Image 1 (cartoon, helix red, strand yellow):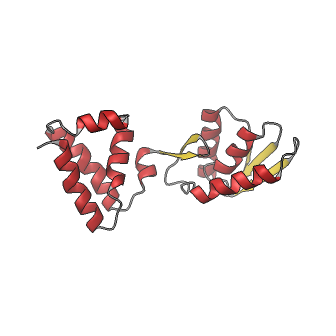
Image 2 (cartoon, helix red, strand yellow; image 1 turned 120 degrees about the vertical axis):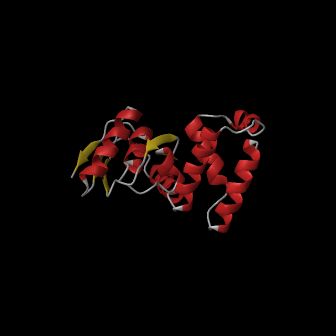
Length: 164
C-alpha cells in the first residue's frame, strides 16, 4: 500500500468523525519536518508497518478531538512559532487581529501593557516583538501557563514580565 492510499483511507474516516481531513497531513508533515513537495513525493512510496502505526497514531489523536497544534506542540501566531500544550488555549486568528488593532491604535514609543490571562504569552510576546520599547507584563492564575509563556519568551528572545 502506498502512503497516498493510507492517507486517503484515514482522511475519509476523519471526515466521517467530523474532523478536518487536512489535519492528518498537516500533523504528519510537521512531525516529520517535511516540506509540501517532500510530502507529495513521499505519498508515492510504499508504507512500512512502522509508518502505518505512526499515521494511525496521529489519526487516533485527531479522532479523539485532540487539536493538531497540541499534537505537534506548537502554533503559529503573528509570525512566531509558540509552544502550546494542554496547559494553555491555542492562540486564535481573531487574537492576531486584536494584536494588529492594538499596534495600529498605539504607535507611541513608551507604553506599559498588561496582558491578563496570558496563557502561552501570545499577545504579550507579539506586542513586545513589535514594540520593543513597551513594558509588557503578562499575568495568569496558572503557574503552568506562566511556565509555558516563559519558555516561549526565551525561545523568541523577548523580555516580558511574568506574574501570577
